[in-house]
Length: 145
Length: 172
Image (cartoon, rainbow over all chains, first blue to last red; front, side, top):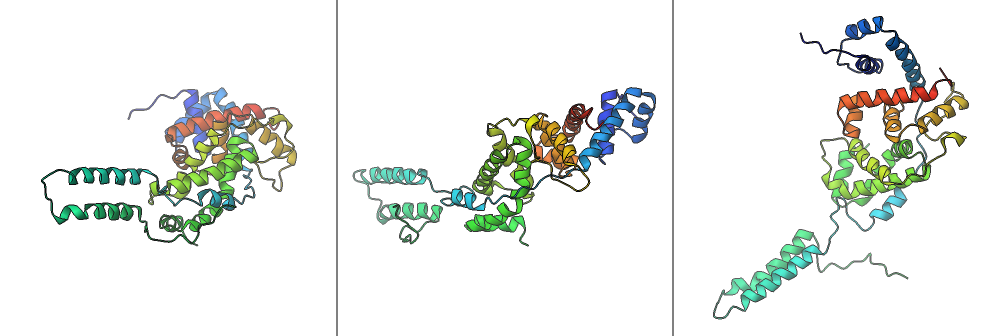
C-alpha cells in the first residue's frame, strides 16, 4: 500500500487531530512510530497538549443580548426573503402599456376585442405577481408627525 | 418547540414576528461568536444585529435541507469582517468578554488566556474558539468557515501553536 511520507509538521498536525478526537490521515501507529524517534515532535506535542487542556477547560460567554426590538425595527418595512416591492415591475408595466398603445395606433388593423383586454390583463398580471390588491385600504398607515 | 425550518416557513409566508424566535434562539451564541472575532462588545452587538437583518432579507435563499445556524454564521462572519473593529488593548483588559468565569479557574488564569487569545490574528482566534469553546468538530468548522477539512486541521494547528507561544511562561 502507498504510504505518504511524513515530515514533522505533518505528524504534529495529524497528532493534534487525534488529540482532538478527530480522524487522522495517518494511523496512530505511524504517528507514534515517528514520535518515538523524534525528540522535537515529542516536546512540541507535550506543550500543545497542555494548551489544549487549558482551552478545553474554558467556556464561551453567552452575553446577554436582546436584539429583537432593534431587528424588528429594521425589518419592519420589509417582508422575509427580500420580496420588498421595488420600482422595476411598475416601469415594466408602463413600458408594456406604451407598446400596447403603439400597437393599437397601427392604422387599418382591427384586432377586435382581444386587444381591448390587453391593458387589464397586464395590470392584473403585475398585481398578481406582486400579490398586492390595488384596492386594499392600508389601515396601518401612520402619518409622520 | 418550533423547529427552525417551520419558523422560516412562517416568515416566508409573511409572518414577520416569527423571525423573533430565531433571533432569540441564536442571539447569545451569535454575539459570542462575533465577540471572538471583533473583541469589542459594541461592535459584536452591531454586527450580530446587522447579520440578523441580512438573514431575514435572504431567507428566501435559505436551503431548508440545511441547518440555520451554519448558514447564518456565514452572514455573521461577513458582517464582522466588514466592521472596522476598534482595536482593543489586549494588555489592558481587566475582565474577560470571550471566556466565561468558571469555578476552579482563577480570574488571573482566565484573563491571561483571553489576552493571549486577543493577541492572535482574528482568523486564528475564531477557529480556536469554535473548536475549544463551542466544541465544534473539524467537519462542522469546515462547514461554518467554508473551507476544506484539511485546512481546518492545519489552521487549527498553527493557531494553537501561536497561542502556545504566547502562553509560554504563563502556564507552561
